[in-house]
Each structure stands twice: as structure tokens, then as C-alpha cells.
Image (cartoon, rainbow, N blue to C red; front, side, top):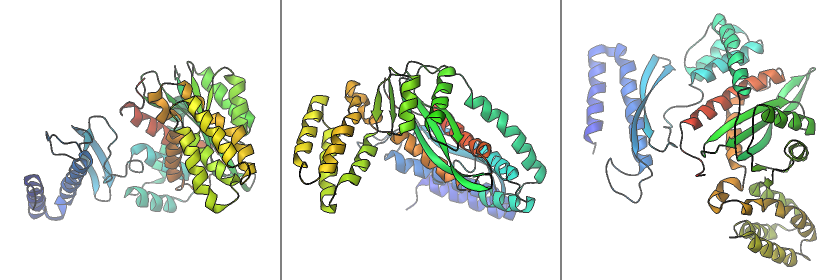
Length: 384
């Protein structure tokens, strides 16, 4: 059985097609997409408007206008909003269809010397319409100043800072090499997330990390109470050099993954993973240390390499216990930056192998700028 809103939508679609024929296709599709997004929000909220329900996940908060370019022209859509953020309809491919991502794809193909025919084919596949070579050239010229200004904008106080690196394929002197993409994310004093900066270079060694972290400091990054990251050796040395007094939390998720390499037997791996989880889930640092002692004793004979590694490394995941308990879940791992890296990876597949570091930096910067802008209007990440 259809609800009154669905009946109304179907009636409007049929009327558009009946009255305007193929000319009414754009309006009909707009109505259908709007209705699909509205229904998706309804499912996400888990309750009808004004309904009291324990399953409710939030509250509707009107609609936001969005223009999307498609194969049948521009569609002016009404994207449903949720009061506390966190919802975006899967009906829309948020990143690829944004104006910034389109300009980015054009600029990337332009700098790689891709033919106009190939540019047209790729943009039609990505965005549903073709572009001319003059549009490609114009997009390349417009993009860099915007991204450079964003990368060099002043920073402020960010008590928590996450750092991580991932790699992209880049041509260098005729060979394809891996360039490190460094990313920093901060949580402000109001509890909101921000992308603080990014850098791309062939090496992830200490010099690259030190220059990157120093650039954050030069731009005004202060008030840092904790760095959260994996155990990159270059990163550790650079962090100590630039912010020597700021404590460090090693990502507990990566620690659990690293531990598996020191477990000698397959049947032991689930047990070791459970024991390490119990250590990290302890209610206090004292209890965590007690459970660590038990683990060292338990596996002393069956997994001596694990014991040696755990004794030296697991306590690097205990720094979180020095901070408010309500923050532990968010600052015990670098998961927030891992999710950002996944979005970067999804977009960079389009470009494949970059012609140089500057080209890679252009694409990564645009993706990160878009994510950071979305966070500014989203819900609070941490209650400070």
C-alpha cells in the first residue's frame, strides 16, 4: 500500500509525462529522486514525523537545495537534512557530482595531456555530460589558487590532532614511484573536526613529516594536548622535534593488527586478539597494566616473540587513559583519518597514475577541502 505522499508523487510524475512528453522527463526524474531521498531519510530516522520511538535516530530538519548536472540537463533537487547531521542520501553520489570534483577531474586530465576526446568520454562517464577543451583549460587555471589558499589558511587551537600517511602512484623521471600523502585532522575546542593540512612528496621519511608538522605550527596550530597516529618512525621523530612536550597516543586498532604478526600459531590469533582488546577496554590505566602483565605471563612460553613485542609496544596505546573517559572512544584510534583516506582512495582511482606530485596534491587537496567543509556544518564530533 502506498502512502498519500507517494500517491501524490506518482500523480505529479504521470502528469508531467502526459502533458510534456519527453520534455517533462527532467521534472519527472527530479520528483522521483526527491521522493527517493525523502523515503531514505524516513528509513534512516527510524520513525514517522512527530512519532515517539526508542528506535528514532534523529529528527528531520527541512531540505537543502542542490543542483546536479545529468545527461538530461540540470536537476534542481531538495536534499533532506537531519538535525544533528550524519545523513546523506545514497541516491546522490555526493563527491563525484559536486562542482569541485568535476573541475578537479578536468584539471587532472588536462595536466596529464589526455586528448579532448578522452576527456569528453571520462567526464561523460563521471558526470553525465561532455566538456570542451577550453572548459578543461579554464578549470585547471581556476583550481590551484583556491586549493593553495585553503592549504595555507591560518589555524588555531586544536587539542586533538590525528596524523597519517597513505601512498599514490606518481611518475618521477620516467619511473612510477609511490609518493606519501600526509594528512592532519584536528578536533577544535568546540569539538568539531577540521582537515588541518596535507602534503605530497616521494618520501614519508622524517624530513617530509618534520616539514609538514612545522608548516602546521607556522600556520598557528597550538593548544595541542594529544597526537594520535600509527607508529611511523619518521612521524615519531618529527613530532618529537616540533612538539616535544605533547603526548602521543598510538592507534590501538593498528596495535592489535601489528600483534598478529608475532603470534606463532593460527589457533592462537583469536585468543591473543581478545586479550589485547580486554587490555585496551580496561576502565583505567592501572587495570590495563595488570591485564598486560597477565598477557605477558600467559604467552611467555607459547609465543615469546609476541611477549617481547607486547612489553615494548602495547603501553604506547595507554596514553588515552590520561584524558576524559568520555573522549576515549574517539581518541584511542586513528579511525577518523582512515575513513578520510578511504575517500581519497575512491577519488584518486579516477586519475590512476599521477604525472607528478603537484598533480596528486591538487586532487587530494580538493577532496579534503570538500570533506572539511562538510564537517563544518555537521554535528559535533566530541563534547569538549
